Image 1 (spheres, helix red, strand yellow):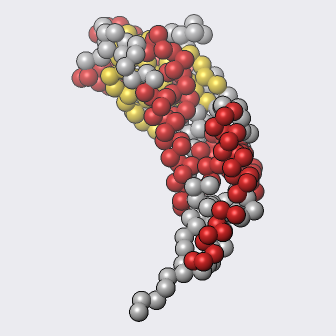
Image 2 (cartoon, rainbow, N blue to C red; image 1 turned 180 degrees about the vertical axis):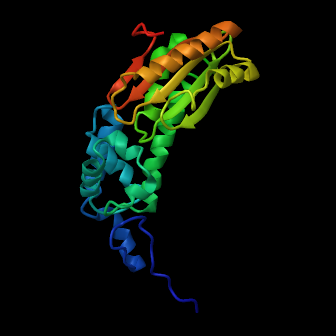
Amino acid sequence: MAEKDDSFDFGDAPGKLAVPSAARSDAGKHAGAGHRARLRERLLKGGAEALADYEVLEYLLFAGIRQGDTKPVAKELLKTFGSLSAVLNADPKALQRVKGVGETSAAALKAVAVASRRMARSEIGTKPVLSSWQALIDYLTTDMAHLNVERVRILYLDTKNRLIDDHHLADGTIDEASLHPREVIRRAMDVGASALILVHNHPSGNPEPSRADIDVTRRIAEAGRLLGVTVHDHVIVGREGHVSLRAKGLL
């Protein structure tokens, strides 16, 4: 006769132990079951502001920690990383260094970050970018503001200002070596773009442009004018907000 399997897997639950199968019928009666049900009801009925940041994390952690109180783990994540956004955008290995967070929980948090980026990008995928400016800023902020390295991207647009190529050009300090005007405009020719928007982030959090940011932008704009490619803007994003060089009169 085959031996009875009394093991179970409760995701990332701290201190996992084998529990007899007879005890599984009481799984829904653990101390946190009522709290989880109340959180779920508030989430479904109360809208975007129904839960505090730590409660949002609590709920997401349910996927990996099937029983018990996830509040201490959620609060420790916020304490460690500083904000809900920083938690969701953290490296999975860094997340797992927080006590109580295992691979399953880290994957659940990562999935939310991926979904939010894809939702933001879908908002600008088929619409003219210049008439969907806030959607563009939301997308860029979601995708880049949290980065701890400087990243340069070029958004290439067609004649109707729709996005045709979101090109990740380089990581590192912005200068003519990483953002050469000739190469930027050459790619515009290759993809059939008639306009472009330069984008990069400031890991410091402060999005104010440097002199190098301004100088290289003007050189690219001048190269574009010679070949019929319009540089609409250079957007710099950071945790403290964003800056448009055109809005500041610098382009």
